[in-house]
Length: 218
Image (tube, rainbow, N blue to C red; front, side):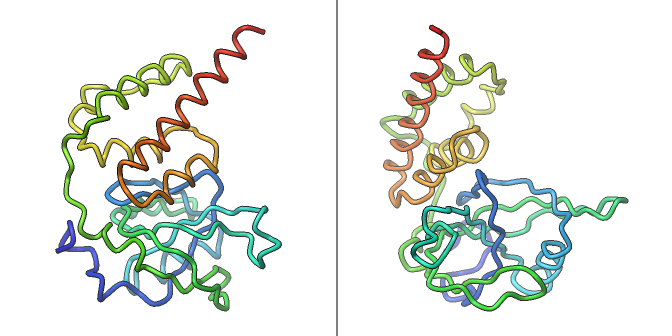
């Protein structure tokens, strides 16, 4: 069974999906991504999503893929609109909660200005079966590395709250929240096993710490 009664089962995942290409922004299963929507085409996208399955695919652009006929990374993640608020100046504030990752099979004709793809869900269907994983051999090591990173980068965090996260919530929330490089976020997103996502996050944190150390010496 899916981990939320509001989220689709594998059989009900849509065959087409609106996408929001946004650099350095990923959504991960069971984690939330807040978005400020103001462009007319993406306002259309939100309205259309709410009228159907409530899902939006987050995909990072990648200019390196242009020679393959696309400007998008091949893998993204579908998020369900789980909160919605309109502003007096015509914006929409939403939160996407990650449901299931996907590979892009092909891009379809745009609808009302926004882009639409045909997703391939098969590789990531285990995302729908995820349970809260509350331990893990690398959990304390990940938290220790995070504390070093936040200290060096002068970032703040409620560590009491972090300790309450499951290992999955910890990895996925940090992949969204930390200002990593776009391709570092992409590497975490594309790793199929949670252990590999943890390793990708730790590699990005270690690289950031090394870069900060080199910079501080000059």
